[in-house]
Image 1 (cartoon, rainbow, N blue to C red):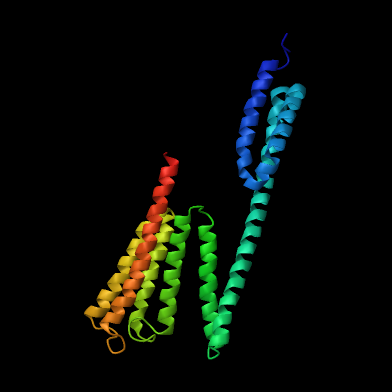
Image 2 (cartoon, rainbow, N blue to C red; image 1 turned 135 degrees about the horizontal axis):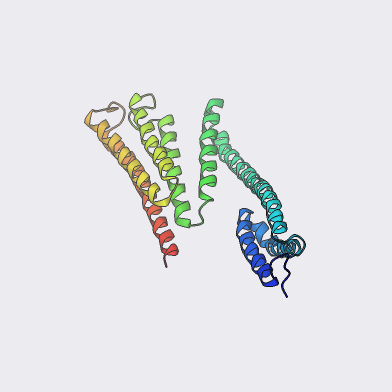
Length: 265
């Protein structure tokens, strides 16, 4: 006969089952590695606690347990997530810093005429590009997306490097080269607006390629930098960057197609 002071045994089991399903869903707040190692054990312990609280305090006991569990889960999940993020970020920063130092050894040995300012600027560009790639690309498991990010960042780094070193339009001191800041601005704004989604990034990189081509057209129409750079040189260099940005856009588009194909088999 059912206990008049509380729910029946069948009601208890339904409440336990529902609570366990909800709890397992909430465990997704923890990092995957922790869930895979401790998830089942945590769910079993929670199920036993639910039965115990229902037997002792009924529905109020279960509600009190949930109030305690939700508070504890929120705090511990945030702590575990932040610890994992800090650890991964630290490893990424150290790895990129070591790679940057190794790359800078080459000009240090081969081009001792570099000044301290040259090394600082070069190191900042390489480190910033590498760290951006690690932080952005690690969020996507698809090779196409990672390759697209790599091509786009490499093109941006090379564009800045060439303009600082010798300039694309005339010499590095020619103010016309400042138009390439606008090219990079188009790509950055596009990445922000698209929130790094594949399809949006494809459109952003196509717009960047178009901006790159527009700079070359403007330079040729108005004869900018014609004293130091021949039209063929400007067209050749600009064509290279247009191809790189457009290639990155195609890779992003391919990554978006793969994502949709996996989502809707």
